[in-house]
Amino acid sequence: MQEVILQQLQHITLESQGLNQTASFGTGKNAVLKALEHLGYIQIDTLSIVERAHHHTLWTRIPDYHPNYLEELMEERKVFEYWFHAASYLPMRDFRYALPQMLSVKENQSHYYNADPKVMQHVLDVIRNEGPKKARDFESESKKAGSWWSWKPTKLALERLFMQGDLMISKRKGMEKTYDLRERVLPKDINLKEPSSLEFAEYLVKTYLRAYGFTTLKQITHLKTGELLKKEAQEVLQSMLQENSIQQISIDGMPPVFVQSDLLEKTFAPPVSQVQLLSPFDNSIIHRDRIKQIFNFDFRLECYVPKEKRQYGYFCLPILFGNSFMGRLDCKAHRKSKQFELIHLHIEDVNINPDLWLEPFIKSVQQFADFNGCPSLQLTQVSPTKFTKKVEKYLRKLT
Image (cartoon, rainbow, N blue to C red; front, side):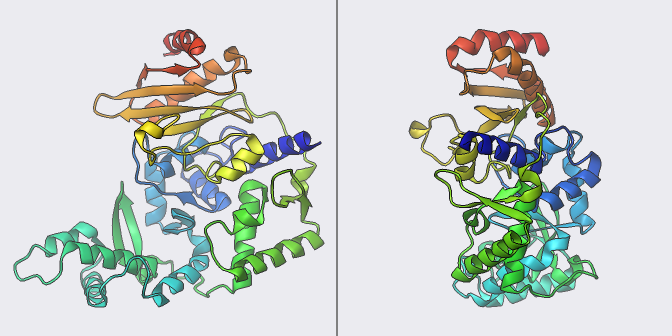
């Protein structure tokens, strides 16, 4: 019975995440906004071993995705940057739910962006009088003769003012951010009423239920502190149980699981027979305990692990085939030579017939390589080694 429930939860979360069918959110720029509003956030990451996480995550779900789409949506004020559990893009409609953290930062003088108030005021005055600024604009200023500030304090000031909501990021090009006053970035009709603790808890509960189809209290409060939030989230869940919009189920080794009632009995079509290479920061994989419990896939990103202690490689991508995480691929985009290196392909579900997954795997790798601007593929290593010749054969055949 537990196995049947786990399989149903796998189908539920893959559908809710937009991973069980091609183009679940549609195509084009409108699909980007639709995906972001459905998922609740997209994590931003600076690592560029392959295309950065925010673009990779959206490309996985939107076949014709282009990075310009996200940049344009920012400039159209339909999305904004702030903190979810990490630096993220969020839908502008949810801006008011960022206010509690902004106010908390503003009131906390010991926050980790502990900037000099005089430098903060200077930064605000410059942006107010001269318009939007990048961090390097202040770096240039600091080199003027007689300057009493330096780039590091102004960078801290920019980040502090951003975290407390006085500044927003008005545009981004790659990883370079442009800052402007909040009132010049926000749409005129945006709701600026701070949510109550109960409203904030309800926002989190419903965001996770919409994005995953099910959730746990631990997931809802992930990296969010405070007993009040936990208490309010429990109240929201209890209310939804009473109205029968969700059901509570038990899974061995897991805290209570809350599932949308309409999904629990749903009959799902088989996932498309495609292989998907996910970002290590993809929404579907970011809660490592949950993936281990539901899919029996133990994933850790090892780029922060000393080289000698790595088991799989510096920057592995989880490989999803149907509703199974069948392995992981350590890879790198060599942009100067336009070569995409498959450093080490780890096949973990060795019971799946290679003839079922090899062709879609190579096609997916080629599409991802093209997205990275590196159309030439190079295979270095395969584990177990018994699959090496077969992978090489399909690689020659399909590229």
